[in-house]
Amino acid sequence: MIQDGTFTLVYKDGSHFTFQVETCDKGTFAGRRIVSYLMGADNENDYAGLGFLNGSTVALWSKHKGTKLETRAAHLNILFGMPERLEAAGMDYALISGRCRRCHRKLTVPASIHRGYGPDCAGMAA
Image 1 (cartoon, rainbow, N blue to C red):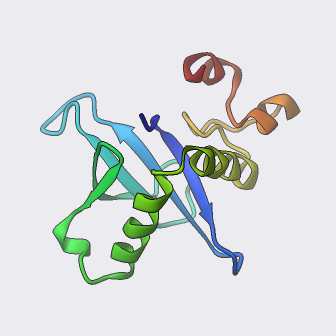
Image 2 (image 1 turned 180 degrees about the vertical axis):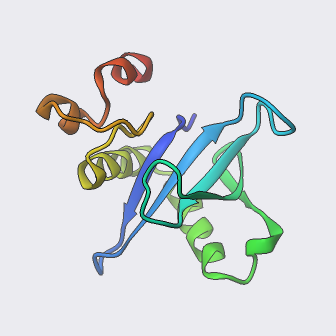
């Protein structure tokens, strides 16, 4: 199962795509898993929905069909089938942003940065 968290997919040309998987806990989408992408500079708040996560497949929302995000969703569908690469994408997010890949808090302890999680989230991810 794909854990909730934030990940950065780094492309060969050096560009990157940051996204998160989050299970909604209230409202209309309670219990549904949403994949969002980072669309601005604020690593904590600038995410926009891309689609639902059904198993290990992104069900892209129709408003994104025919856009660059459709290609990104296809990349994520490949990535979600490769657990070791998905783990690396979580680490890439932590190393690039300096933030916990689960809760987005700033990581200040070197061991936490290299683990990709702060101490509280590391216990939950285990």
